[in-house]
Length: 156
Image (tube, rainbow, N blue to C red):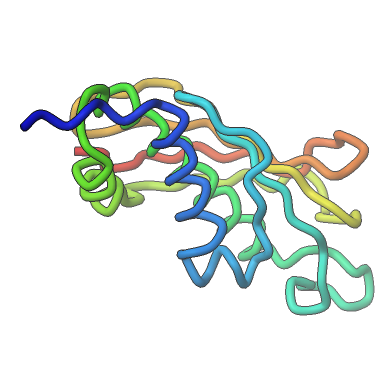
């Protein structure tokens, strides 16, 4: 008996749930997925005392910036699997996503992480059968660019 193909929206919903609710570190960061489509992702999070790296200036810790950009890159790389999994099952898709991992990450810190809420976005620069290269950006609530990143992710 053939199972019907899983719609793209269901696969994206699975990714949203995974990155928002089932990865404990992402919950610690307070990440919420605000946009998700094949090849692109956007997340938002708010500053909290636990995320501050400089208590005098009340700026984000550099590790938080790096972690959010990395998680956004992984999420973006995972969206590329949606198209690859067309016609497959949700279980097959979930198994593919569990193999996504960071190979390399570069972060350029452009300005101190000041603000109340932050948005990280990712776009696929190149995706192959085994590796995807993702470009990430982090902005504050006034759209000031705070950091950029480039990540290479294992996707197959």
